[in-house]
Image (cartoon, rainbow, N blue to C red; front, side):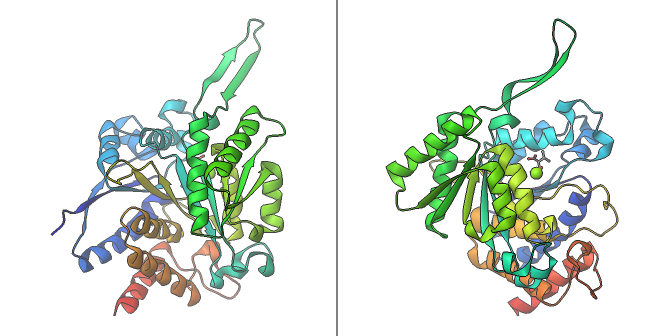
Length: 370
Ligand code: IPM
Ligand code: MG
């Protein structure tokens, strides 16, 4: 029998803990039914790790993440950490994890489930059948550029600096993923930057265009400014198939795309590194939503984004396509049956709790597997 795969679970803060509890039940469900199970490790991350160890990412958690076959993360952050120094803040733990694992390719699919068409704040005809993928560069750009900081000038004026920087290779490798994936989807890529204002935008466009000409001329390529893209996402999102963009624009545009689907609570994500010689790659899966301190600890959160992140893990890290389909089908059926958490509840429906949503997905898995 093949050795078990290791799965590192990092629940994090706020609703991260609650949604992960539900995902654990689903992981267990699969574990009981498969020859190859997971060895599961768990660590605090973010604020929880800061509280426990004085750092948002302990060395031990980082080294286990580097060795794990996949990492599943809930969410980090909370207002109680607002005054903690930046390098100790919960977000710093997540950024360090992304950087150290070199997870440069962040996949954020935005799919509208049929049952949820009316949960979107946009008109039905605008979002019905929507299936787009935002590919966000995750380990460079203004999130990591140096110099950065707040300084005092000679005349006493204070000034803050962030640096947006991209190397050719950093752009090329994310564009390469976009074009490769386009071939398996709608064969269309929108590359998004601000070439009208930013040097990195001009360079981004140049590098993407060159790679397209060299290797992927059969893929339809469009260039779009980020502000226009934000507008087009709410005007006519179905014009897009894959959007590839930098770290900051990707952060913003993916929140925007998330709402097309009805709720941030529905969006999964995968962050992938490069493949090594053996075909193995670092991978971290997490919902796009944050720790939602306003509803944390009340068993109200929507666990579906994290459950769908688990499905992405089965697909991308373990090639378990049927199992991934099964999870997604279960979610679809649960939504189809009108079972909704508060964020996606429709008129005349009663909202279920986070754990009841977990119950419903498990019951559906039982049914589908019977
Ligand atoms: C995201 C989040 C993070 C980011 C925060 C929590 C650091 O908003 O994953 O989109 O800005 O990347
Ligand atoms: Mg974000």
